[in-house]
Length: 96
Image (cartoon, rainbow, N blue to C red; front, side, top):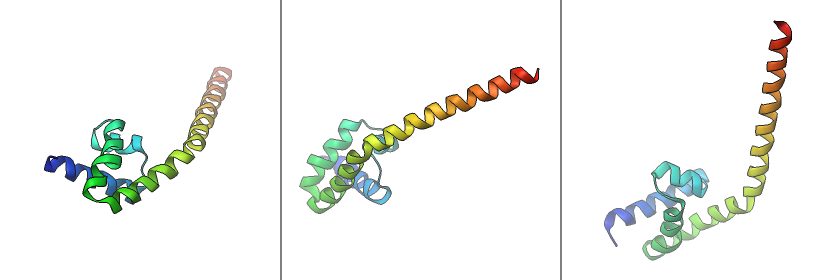
């Protein structure tokens, strides 16, 4: 395995662990795909540093188990924002 890939896998794991990052956040931060994040943590890192791989996997598993909650909160925020936007637009029209 190439050295830069090994370094990236370790860097990714450290980022995930230190910031409780999701796969999506990690992929965005490192400019790689979500698939590459998974492969780095589950396959490559396991060969390089199994302990670190296990820690990163635990964080990712917790994030995975909570994703439905984050999705629901994001949807709620979206509709609250739309409602507030509609209220403000209505107020502007009434004031003119």
